[in-house]
Amino acid sequence: MTWSPATSERADAIVARYPERRSAVMPLLYLAMREEGRLTDEGMKEVGDRTGITAAQVLAAASFYTMYKREVGRHLVSVCRSISCHLLGSEAVLDAVADETGVPDGETALDGSLSVESVECIGACGGAPAIQVDYEMVEGMTPDSARALVRWLLDESPEVIRSDDLQGRFGGSPSFDPGPVDPVGAIGPFPAFGPYGTAAT
Amino acid sequence: MTEQILTTRMDAHPSDSHTLARYEQTGGYAALRKALGMKPEAIAEEVKASNIAGRGGAGFPTGVKWGFLAPSTPRYLVINADESEPGTFKDRQLLERDPHQLVEGIVISSFALGVNHAFVYVRGEYPRPARRIQAALEEARDAGYLGDDILGSGFSLDVTVHLGAGAYICGEETALLNSLEGRRGEPRIKPPIPAVEGLYAQPTIVNNVETISNIPWIITNGGAAYDAIGPEGSRGTRLFSVSGHVERPGNYEIVMGMTWRNLIHDLGGGIRGGKELKCWIPGGASAPWLVPDNLDEPITVQACARLGTMLGSGGIVVMDETTNVVAAALSLVRFFAHESCGKGTPCREGATWLERILERILHGEGRRSDLDLLLDVSDNISPGLRWPPAMTTICPLGPSAVSPITSIMTHFRHEVAAMVSGEVPAGV
Image (cartoon, rainbow over all chains, first blue to last red; front, side, top):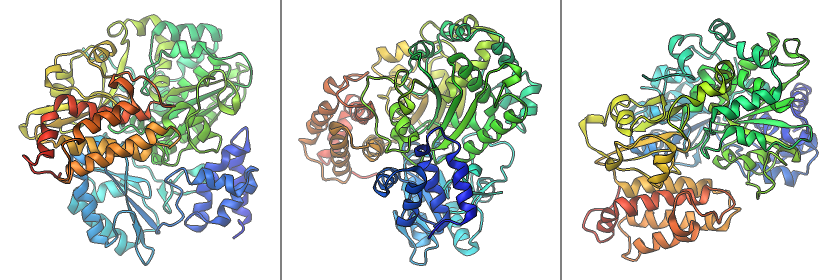
């Protein structure tokens, strides 16, 4: 799949943010995921063509990082399992998510609706246990609230995921006062960031 | 009295502390105006005089680091916002709640270092903090604090926010630079240090978010004023992330020298549910643990060194009396095994061995020889089992995986032994 003129324009703008074009590899990999919902061979070839490196070099970089996924559902549910979340019951939260969705840790639902994964520390230790949906944070979870969260994801299939929305509906006590609402949200299983063209407002 | 440098604005103005309007209204960007009237070397002198040490984990004196910067151009400043050390969430709050403080620190530091292009490397799992710092940069640019000819000074600066993609190792500065160049985030062998050959093999300074967020205050008040806060060798305030089994988890900015009892029992509200304290991690997952006998020790760099541990990233994880320390250690060791980049053999192989041994002990399949084996494998990763470690690996990740092992074998060996012999049931 060749990138559309609009996507090409976005890619050019991303490359222009750096003194050397190879530095655009990581942001362009996110753009490639946005284009196809996951990372493909074609996407990596596009990234290589735009940064002056081979497809093998792109694969070498992409395969190093956990967030570039070749198989992933429409939404990604990441349950933190590192020490602070572990101490406050993250195993039970993960079990609840897997049970409610029927999707075990590290797998994707057969209908492609979502993926479930346990992840290492996401920096929400003061609001443990924590979850991210498409990298939007929700803190102070319980097994029950985690069940409600994934049930909502499956039933409502929301187009945009916003951290404040998740926190308001399902969250408990956060690590710190989050301040005013952030209107930006995620549109797929990759981080929502305006300059990368991966966000909805 | 608790002096605050970094968190006053977000405490006083929770609804808009992240905006340019509030930042300017509370004195923001006055330090930049002052700095642009100074000689760059004079700014670096103030930073050196402040004796501020890096807040990312290694604790290296910032002014000394700046002094290593090689003269060739172009040079780069990279802000390390790859906060990933388990137990640490302070930089996330600084990025989300007071991004202009960091932006002003970046502009002042870049002017001092002769840098015209700076980067903020934000971990991929922090899109919201990345959006906040990006919005602040755009506001600053529109107001003339960034871009070409800043405030008519002739100094120009561009700042690029870069998202990581889920690799703890990229918090290590040379791995971060590889990542920023579009490569696998494996650490480089030093020397050369980044200040000599860093990003694109050019002189580069890598500083933590909290470190650079202190720069506006240091320029406004002078290095000597910062050096007057806290005990010698542990100057200034620090933002500590307190989590685990405490009543009031959160980030607390304190003057160093306070005791652990103050921080855990007074600020943190003590142990949840009226339980007893068992132990705590004093400086992120990499740090060897402390126990209740250490509660009246001061929170200083020196006291931690004497106790064979460190303040590291400022992540304090508190564990109560009910904690299964083998399960806790497994959580930590699994983290390091998962995050090992594979470049250094003792780290790659050793961390995985430690994970598997702890797993079988926890599942009731431990062997009596496993106690010695845990220490033997650890000694192969980190010879002598001391802290700070004897470095046989390329970066400190490998020795960090050993800290939970030495901690449970020093303080709770009887619990591990009892689990191996079947005296107590295994399992979480």
